[in-house]
Length: 259
Image (cartoon, rainbow, N blue to C red; front, top):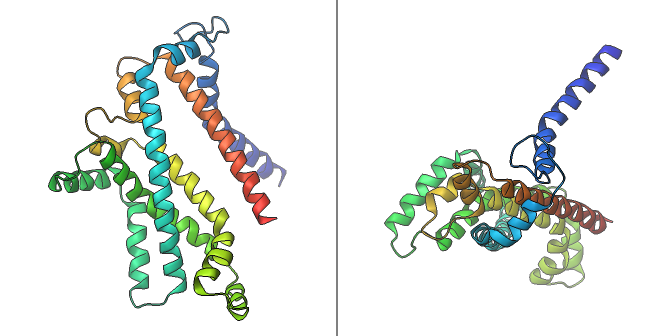
């Protein structure tokens, strides 16, 4: 038994090291004065260069933020309405609707990217650019948001709705005063997941981007072709810290909502 516990601990810590050592190295190297991997001295040189001499990088960063926020917001609204429709209403093709929503989750990104590119090429009204990226990100965020919100609805006590109706609440009042407040943790989780997926996406975006509309992952990848710049390490460190703050804030907010 002791041997099994020791082996489990070794495997656990090995996985932790494997996952987090590259991130720790990236953060450390962002404070290295030298461009090389060998440590020279502590410096904020690359952060100064990032803020003062990288306008193109910041332009793609803010473009990515705008696309991620808007696409996640729209995706969560559609997914919330879809989850309510799937859970509350009975119809013959309900199972097929869930299956159709599930398929994009298992399809390779390259297939989704190619299909969206064909769609935009056939539909000349939407040129490749920010609008096409926004539509693409909204499209692949909806299934993820839908199943996160539906998992929250699995724990929902439907008797509360009946109680609200007995007290004279209309369907709309039951939706806004009872259903949506209880769905808030799921909606927030879905929004944060969509935000992360949108900011992180490279494959699908590379198919539907146009001139002057590159997102941050595409810009970073194009910079890596000429070698790893320490300014990328600095920007990545800022993004990691921002993600941690966002994740911790979300966790505290959900705990507060759940009481």
